[in-house]
Amino acid sequence: MGAAQLEAAARAALGTVYDPELDEPITDLGFVRSLTAEDGRVTVHLRLPTSFCSPNFAYLMASDSKDALGALPGAREVTVLLDDHHDSDLINRGLAADAGYRGTFGHEAEQDLEELRGIFRRKAHTAAMERALTALLRARPELAEEQLGDVVLGDLPDTDATRALLRRRAALGLGTDPADPALVDDDGRPYPPGEIPLRLRFARSVRISIDGNAHFCRGLLRTRYPRSAADQSARPEEFPEGGESVQAGDLFQLTAPPKENVS
Figure 1 (cartoon, rainbow, N blue to C red):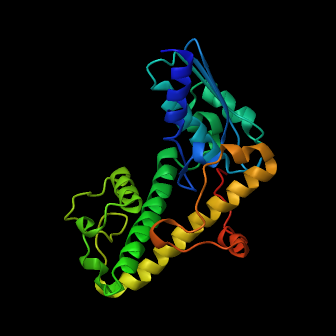
Figure 2 (cartoon, rainbow, N blue to C red):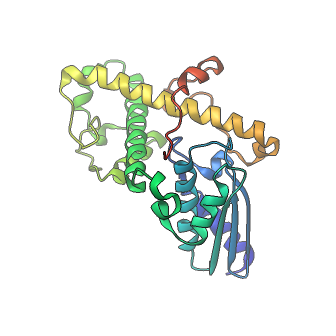
């Protein structure tokens, strides 16, 4: 594999790595500062919106990046470096030594990495479910919220929102059969009809929080690295399939809960 081909394959591989909190690829967010590929050696520098972004999130993205690049057939040697973070040295040493999450952070790593990943996969599923079902409600005004318990995956139109929901369900091990109910809890169980409006409102709050944080972090990255705007994929002001937009004045309220820390 030539250098240009390997670089293209490496960039595509990084596109499968998601920020766990924002549920967007790190390539779309502009977190990939540089990428070089030569003679089978792939080197990536990552950057984050602030120097104090949660270390566990930072490690997860850097580790996932190394795993994704290491799986490429033409990559003989992979180096992933996190720049300008207060734990850069610690994280970079751990990655270089393949020490793993607990081996990198030691006693500070109170949560298992897979446990942490699971938390944010569940949040991403909740947000994706709300997007798809809100779009359905807007497309079918005669459908009441209480009737969403009768909606199955096969009732959802073939849209980006539906495909995203199916991906999130698959990541959690939930059913993706067209006959499976669309509105379910984290374990795949349908909600009683009387609980549906409340559960939908909760799901909407999760989705708005994720979308608001994504807008906020994109802006922080552009402030910290002015040239990073060119590396960010455009994000619509209106969220897909009729979701609610986040106004600039709402961002601080939506992002008030701080990112989780390892300590």
